[in-house]
Amino acid sequence: MESYLLAQHRSWLDFLMDALIEGGVVKRLDLAINDMVGILDIPELTEKCNHEECISVFRSFKSYRSGELVRSHEQDRYGMGNTLYVGSLKSEVYFCIYEKDYEQYVKYDIPIEDTKIKNRFEIRLKNERAYHAVRDLLTYHDAERTAFSIINRYMRFADSEVDKRRSEWKTNERWAYFIGSDRGRLKLTTKPEPYTLTRTLNWISRQVAPTWKVLEQIDCTNGTTYLKDILDHTKLTEHHKKLIEQQTTSTEEIITEQEE
Image (cartoon, rainbow, N blue to C red; front, top):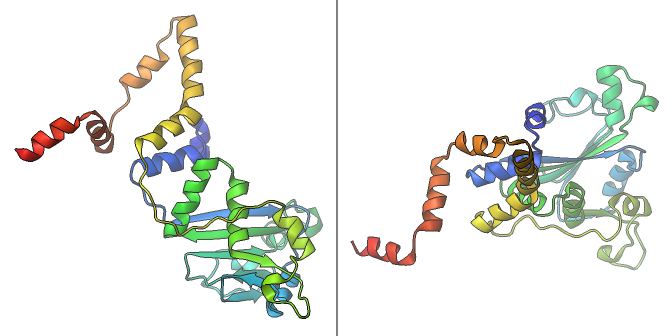
């Protein structure tokens, strides 16, 4: 799919926007953060969960040592190394943190010290949560912002402090370094709103207009007809025709039709 998009000079964001405009439904979305230098220590994070130093809206966590993953959970379970799940695997949002270097060693016989990615933090979203994450991606065009804002909303690791409530415990220094400063908190449960013509125009302005202007100038200079050819060969779907009808029908015409 990615090769196809590259051949069409389109990004995953272009694809997601097209899917939503066409009335597509987002059933699953995974966002992955690659830890290239070993900031995350999965056994240490697991111990923090055991000592209630994971302050989270999730009520459960599960951890597996190398080779111990439950078979029904993962396609590549045999090679994921130490793994920590935060949240229920049956819920619409949960996190999976695992040793990617061990996976590369098992699958491709790459020495652990030579692997580029040490750990991987995956945000796994379904249904409504996935939809709102896509909305945020399309609004800000910043996958890093979306991913870390979700993590920041649902979980943080802290260091226990005597005589203080858990909510007041100071964030663990290593975790603070991983999560970064000034991160927002993205809620994934607000009521969805349908995409409007305004949103479509905003997307065209950001994604299509620059390329359109380039082709326009090329046509003007070289006497070519790239833009005309594109428009002549573009086919409208029923969804597009309905959108045109909605935007070109006057209020008076709608009232007249209803009276008839």
